[in-house]
Amino acid sequence: MLSILGKVRRAGGWTRRELLKVGGLAWGGGLGQRAGAQTATPRGQGFGRAQAVLFLYMQGAPSHIDLWDPKPEALPEIRGEFRPIATRAPGMYLGEVLPRLALQADKFALVRSLGVKPRGLANHGASIYMLMTGYDPSNFSPTGLAVPPSPQDPPSVGSVVARYRPAPRGAPSFVSIGGPIREGSVTGVGQFAGLLGGAYHPLQMHDDPTRPLRLEALSLPPDMTLGRLQARLDLRTGLGQRPVATSAFDAYYDQAFSLIESNRAARAFRLESESLATRERFGFTKFGQSCLLARRLVEGGVRYVQVNWPAGSDTEPEPGPDGSWDTHRNNFPMLRDWRCPVFDRAMAALLADLHTRGLLESTLVVVAGEFGRSPKIGAPTTDNVGPGGRDHWPECYTALLAGGGVRPGQVYGASDRNGAYPRLNPAHPYDLLATIYHALGLDPATEYHDSLQRPRRLVEQGQPIVGLF
View 1 (cartoon, rainbow, N blue to C red):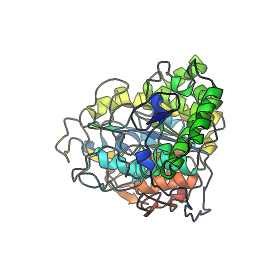
View 2: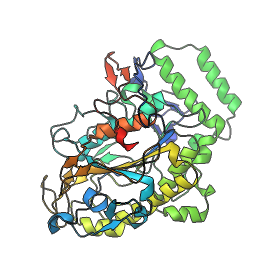
View 3: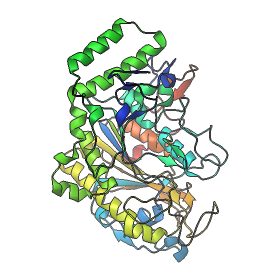
């Protein structure tokens, strides 16, 4: 293990403290990803309109019926306690728990017909893996529970973007903020570069953004200068390289050095530069300040920013601004009093801020959980539903998309009368990921070669939802 600042640490992703450490060679050795990627590069609607992506991942999975797809004509045990409210988009209704977002509906579109049958039982792990990588989790158990990240995993969407649409020099290509993705005892499901190698791991900043962020990894220690650092790099180059390690080392070192040299990334992380009024508009919560930080990162040139809801996917729903969306019980008070006020405020502020700053047209914003919640209240599908709860429901749910060429104010697809299954224009989560690639100007059929020289597509299957553009 080698560190360009002289310290040795374990291998892993780009955490805040490990940014400048060269690790993960076992994750990238022997890959042929730099040699002749095959692309068809279609030029359809919306292709290449986005210059950046903000992916807001609602881990734990909000109830689509209660937030995005109200069913006022359904039976009480399905429609729940919330009434629908009109929005600024004609014909689009949201749950009453999203009043601020309803006023921004002329800036976003909804896909109400997402659905999937994950491998094994409808547990979080398998669905997260599919949403983050675009591949079925063949290494998961029949129960669908998560397994730790592996160098043989397909890369996350952010890692693919970092490989094929890297950010300008001086800015990280893929940053993950908010909270780590957790399912049970496993952290990092579908978050790393896997087969693409450690150079394309995310820069992870999961500190609480309501407090000053520690940015020592993005600046030099007092006893180090850029000249001395460059001399170390020159010395390493002069010592020679083993062929397998060369590209992984070079890519990792080059990115780390460029971040320190430009100081661009460190400036983007300084939330204290924002006015108090702006910070209050987003809300002084982990999620709210993460959304503001995401806007600053896009302004700073980051290509792909992933904002994770701070609570783990299967955390017990508890009162408080950072609790889980996994509402197996007490769904309605949790959404009404805690989850939705935090989300509604931050999301409405983010869309308005991007629009005002002229960033929305070039920034694709995607909001999604790993699945929806069961239509029937208190109906167990995994023997884990309490009073007033909704269970896991991957068969039908909703995603929000805005900017990046997406036509705002529209509803794409429709669920059935109970929000149980897609009725019109069904779409797979892989179609959603293909749409992200499409908006960035990447053909989802692009192939790279894994460590066994097998060709692999960016998305296992699926097509862009071009009707959104």
